[in-house]
Image (cartoon, rainbow, N blue to C red; front, side, top):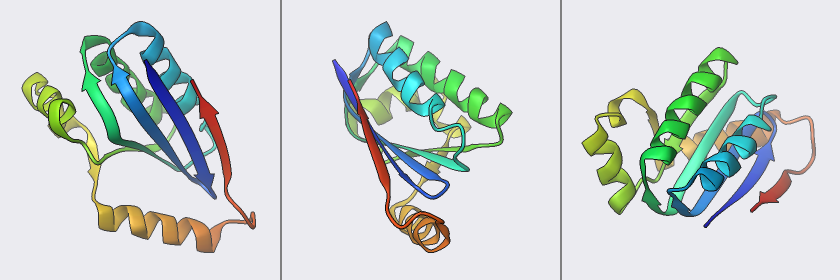
Amino acid sequence: MMTVHADKIGDLAIVECEGRLVRSESAFTLRNAVMSQNDSHTVVLDMSQLDALEGGGLGMLVFLQRWAYDNNIRLKLFNLRGAVLHKLERSGLLPTFELATADEIAELLSYAQHHSCRPSASSQAVH
């Protein structure tokens, strides 16, 4: 099972993924969370708590990358680790994704906080 939590600050959305992105329902949960951020300029997928990634999850990441491109949204993957990083490397897809560094995330957050019209961030959880 996978849990997704989305935080939005200005035009930046951070979607945190926790668990396993291996089954269809997990892939659709991620899809719904990311596509609900359609008014964002940048969507960061924080994958630091993602334990496993399989074919359906890979396919969904490719789909979301295309959806983001078609909607003029930057999709960035952040904090890939262990089996998830290995799976992306083995599939040959890793170079096709935009990876964010910790410094870049800090810059994006700072920019979003200083340029946000809203005084506070909004948050939502999806299971």
